[in-house]
Image: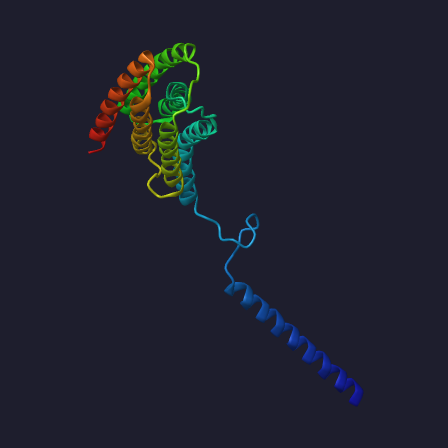
Length: 230
């Protein structure tokens, strides 16, 4: 009898312990936040927030990429020190890059007036491309000008720094048209610096005529875009 009583008592204790353990586990499970099985231990971002982040990134990268590629190509140009020869190639690469940049606004922009302006600028840039190529065929590098080389390098470095700040800072957002206007003004200012430096040292009559016309057009565009943002 003593053995049977002890066995029954032992089983009762075990059953009570099991019930208590199950209760504790259930309570712990209820106290922990639910985690998505597809994202590991990270909380799931709301659909709206995720979409906003994606749109913001796209509105920036679609415009930044052609400009970043352009600046990289300009940096990689082998400088001869000849103002005419070097500027002509810089103008050629810049022209190609700005065409790609304008095309992105035409394809992805929302503001019809701004897209129309970008299309007009794109048409002009394509015409300028032919002019630059014609001038390049006439040029050969001569004796280098150190003062020109140093100043133009500063201009190119400043262009690169400004673009890096735009890509990493918070000045650009989800509005692609606003981003376009901001980047366009920055890049036109950079092109104006390159052109102004060239005009101080250049000798080619045809290239200087192009540079002066280009400089005037840039100033008009910058004033127009700034007027649209006010």
